[in-house]
Length: 204
Length: 301
Image (cartoon, rainbow over all chains, first blue to last red; front, side, top):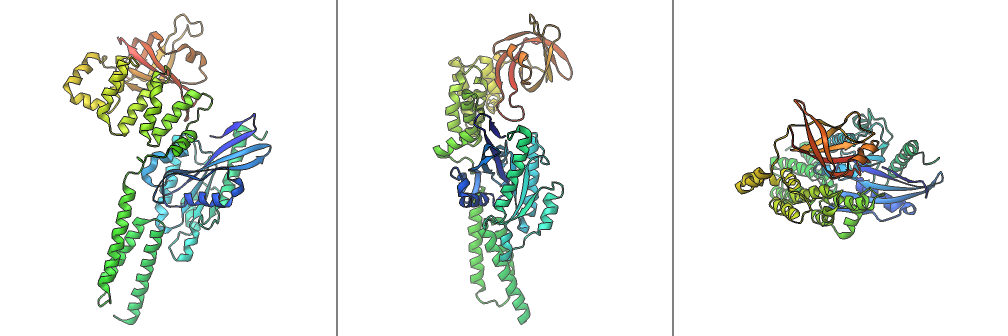
């Protein structure tokens, strides 16, 4: 959970990029690292990868500068998406203040999106947290693949599958091109900071 | 084959091949493999196709390559030995008891184990075997690391060494063995069975909660306090005490003998005495800040 240092007026929170394997979570972080240079406060670290798959997690620290008199630092994490890394995923999710769920727009990934969201729900529940109350946004990634002729899910279908009950902000995107990455992160940060304001009253 | 049919088939082959390649480029090897299998079936059915065998051979080659990729990914990858810098990052990011340096170091060692760095975790956890507050947890975690490394046969010699060094009592050592996978080895070994029989305490039924009466304490003199059992192995119980119960926590130090205890099980209630084996504050999770207390039931009657 977020750490608020009242003396230094510094708040540090954790955002986790969750979603099915091969869905583009690491690509999201890579784009953020490449694009939002002035906010980056450290290296993008991948621990560890097997080929191009995340085994443990990726980590990127960013700084948002002063917000309402408080220095806001954010730790961005990705979880490993493959089903066999369930325990690592749960471990990385622990203490998340906000979540960006990166869903894969490819038709063949429809079931995996749903299973991954269910997995997120279950893991949050194990930490005594409610998916309906956690700051959460959805990103429908890989929309660019439509241009290459691959069968994609309609955004409406993804909304029905994943967001019918949650009703959280959602963003079609392409992490490889950077579409929707900044918007999803920005919205997630807004929701997270609003939520932390209620919990910690950090902005006074 | 009619020209139109041929063109339709050609388009289909082109489309499936493109999909297979794109899935491959996305790292979605299972999906790519399926497409290549469909492609192979389709190509095999076409009569009179020029270079048919050559095309089939190419698809086969691609299929083999994908299968190799898949078997590479299916191999257990989490037993990777990480670099020192990555281990440091894990320790920093996954230990959160910042206000207590000793506890933070303990959590760092624990984090290493959680990310499969078992040898390092054992190394960093070992000094805590001499820490009164954390030694039971340290012992448990070291044993879990041995289990994860599938070095089950090393557990009994290890805990016996702890006993020789007077780090743990005979009963604590026995408890470690009983609650580890090494217990199966003990049961299979008749010599070790003798050891078990010699020192094993009488069988204790499942206990839901315990009542503790503090004699001589002004605060708790009237009624016994009742605490729920969160975990039980034999006559060893783990209790969780809310951080709000400061008075109770302060009264229950390691080594304290509880002379007036009641044990509530679904089928019976019995009185006995107990001794506090360990006490530590939970550093993470929903119970963060609460206290975990391990006690041993003595002389059940």
